[in-house]
Length: 358
Image (cartoon, rainbow, N blue to C red; front, top):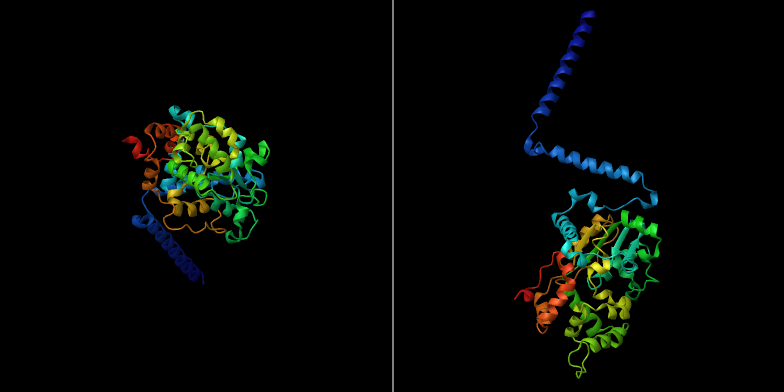
């Protein structure tokens, strides 16, 4: 009986040693093509450390201000290259002392009025008119719970800030504003600055919706009186008049008279203060088909809402149209206009127009 127990113990010992040896062999001879090169575990470790830091920081925040979306500056390793490049370019231009007057502004009430808040999902959206902002407002209206789907939102409600359920950042106290700026996912959209001005001119002074008569009957006459060369002409505001107004270094005295209506043509810098506020993502109108889903995903809301369908070709930069509109404008007036909007061109990577270089 004693010998049988010894034999049984010996068998178990042999099996145990065989299992240990097999495990050692498996760990030693893993296929490098399958599991990656040796440096990959270092990358994975770095990612894990970032995630740990995020978890620790969240634990120390009040529950109502814990972020639900991703903050890009803390999670760069997961960003497509183009979005990293956009933020790097923005950072570098903001630090360029030669462009300081064109890239910096104060975070005034005017800026805070442009930023819409979705507390439920910790999102801030800065409005840049004539860049498809109506659709983004619809997305936020649904997220805030005012309507259950984008299709249900009446067009008359979208820009009615008393009914659309979109609070402005300016409506909060200073401390609440700062908390949201520090912790929320923040984004805005840009497009070629000159094409945006053409869009604003056409929408407000050519087509001029009936519910916005002041553009044609109050603002246009004010611009014509000061900037039209031939005062015997009786036709409405021309693009040339508009360009002279915008390029005038002393344009601000008219801006004050026009009030908040100027949001449709002032610079992105004046609207959103991109060098003072650290935005998570900057989308481009020209690549909106890719940028819209990306923004929804980064904000952590892609499972809740979709960006409305984009008509084919509507976001493509129309170089021919831009050149046609500027073909009758003097080089002096174009250069003055570019001088004002140079910060927008440089901050967001838009090239200087060819017709300025010729």
